[in-house]
Image 1 (cartoon, rainbow, N blue to C red):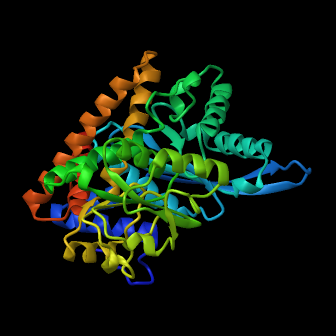
Image 2: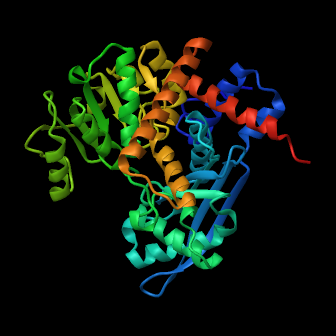
Image 3: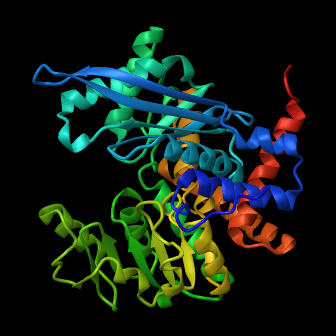
Length: 422
């Protein structure tokens, strides 16, 4: 039975994931048994880890790792640190990873992890101790053929190095393939840093072609100027797009003729903010989302486009660089407005695709140059975009529903081939 969300429930990420799952499952006519298998996480691990802080106090941190599905391969998904991490959020993100890996047809299942902490309040030593103890607590569930973490919100290549080292010390030999998003010198892949932003650019170019638009005539508003938004901005500007606005947590900077992204990055590095950039004008970060543009690219947080503001969007293409930036109730409004949505499980899959490449390279012990990484990324993103749009047109549904249907179909097919172990 489909999940019907109220306005009060629409920002709950797990309920949003269920609602989209239910719609796709209904359209695929999946039987009740298969729905139960696909809906339920395989494992949900909660750990409470004691860590000694620099001042000698002992603090308890709560961590999660959810493995949603391992039907098509090892679990794959990031680990995030934040004071607002919840089990519902991690559940939803793990399920999205299952569908994301299936959409781009790479041999991974879905997983996600998180630790409730504020990295800004922890020293480097405290952060390392939190990371290593969390890794040690879930270590029996990790491994190149079990579950392969990656960076996420407030984690990076240094955190992945700590996880890899902790795992390797426990198994008594170096295992580079246990995580992805590592430093290059520890088995990381070239092109990984830019991968999510590059993937967003690739699918946006495909959408422009479908709508008979040219990059030079395309105004882009990007929310978020971190790894995803910043890389997308830089690569899209280089490809000829006009980046008219960058929206950050503390404000937005706007120039209708296009921002100098390289100069803006330098300004943000020097001042800590995009505000007061000489090459643009400050504006309200909420109002910036409603600027007239061809492409709106939310690349920051969840629940940015909701039923309360979706009717004010003035873009032609919504490319979801973040996970879950649009709520299910907002989807209905976007459909009525005929906005071409490139859903998150397709749009931001460039990151997990190059993570897959990193895993392959680590297991081979043979590393690719950046041109090869980018060529293979483009091939997968282009094929996946075409598959989703074709599925949407064939079944008369929007792109998001098509992406979920395609993903569910692939995972369900794998489960049917394997059978249910009893």
